[in-house]
Image 1: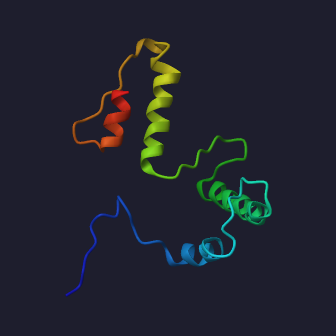
Image 2: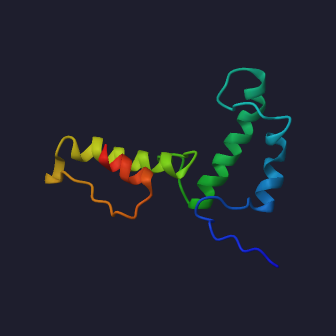
Length: 114
């Protein structure tokens, strides 16, 4: 019997090309590219190349503000809290609410409740 995975919005299989490209950084070159030690220095250039590929892939310029997050929860927090702190807190444009539906992911609801 064949299995069918229907929860790709939560987690999905990594693309084989991405997997191959990441293998060196999942094994021997695992250092944090933002660290100053030698492990970090070894991966810093690769992060720069990856960011260049990202910018090219979405047609962005180096001057554009691109925020890369680790997950959807972090992304939801960035967006909703950004709206709150940049617009709603100061009551700019007469707007003072974020409206979300009852079927949103708990991370959205919790952040909106904040």
